[in-house]
Image (cartoon, rainbow over all chains, first blue to last red):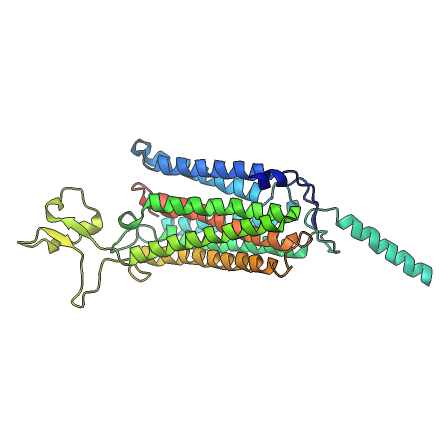
Length: 111
Length: 266
């Protein structure tokens, strides 16, 4: 813990000028939020009354976790936009592949 | 001639200073002003998104299409997978703390955090090995009096023919050589094929990540990991976090939606 506090006073600019990177305390807070969201996901899973409502809820919670990790742990929030562009291009293409394949097998295959 | 050379050197120095004030640089001139290794890593992660996107899409397309069991609801244990998910999430935190430690120049802190990250990665892999083993050796056990009551899964109900006269319980289905016939392997059904391919490739990524982390840990004792070379740790961290975010999607789509009875089949 003392080490964490020590590191939170980070002034090193290093080989890359990331002086605005979050502190270890922020990393810890993000980890706690991720844990809480995971706990909510598992808790919601056992609520039978939600029925189909569970799908959008779990999707939103999953997207939140995803966004937290890439923004704070992978530093996309603080890094150059070109990194975000490269990654998000792949991500969007992957999402389109999922949608296209699902649509293809849903609508264009004989039942 | 000498004056011209001096001007060129001065110009190059100004350009060098200009690019090193940008994010993601490593004291070297690049056309983008960004470090090429880091740029390449992000391009790779973007392409890996498409790779896993294809595998996840395939899993979803074939979801509910298996003719024979076992099915997800027969096998998945959400509490166990939740624990392994938690372990992987926490490993991301320790990874980013390892990076923060090396940026501060704390080699001791770096070693502690990166070793704990590798250990949590190995714990996650142990969970996965345990899960795969359990799935492959899954056996059906049910009381014959429960047949037709709605308390058994569709897979268990498919073995109701075993409840012949004089048999009160079914304890596993085996062939004449004693081999279990109710386990899940990649060739059992479409669910097995797509599930093992998707989670297997993710497991392979985690394994590679653990090897990478341990390499950095041991390399640090030979002076290879320093504050000035924090980009080496940054790249490993990016890869490790990517493995984490892929699992976030897999946990929701494969496990939570997989067991949810109302999840629409494509």
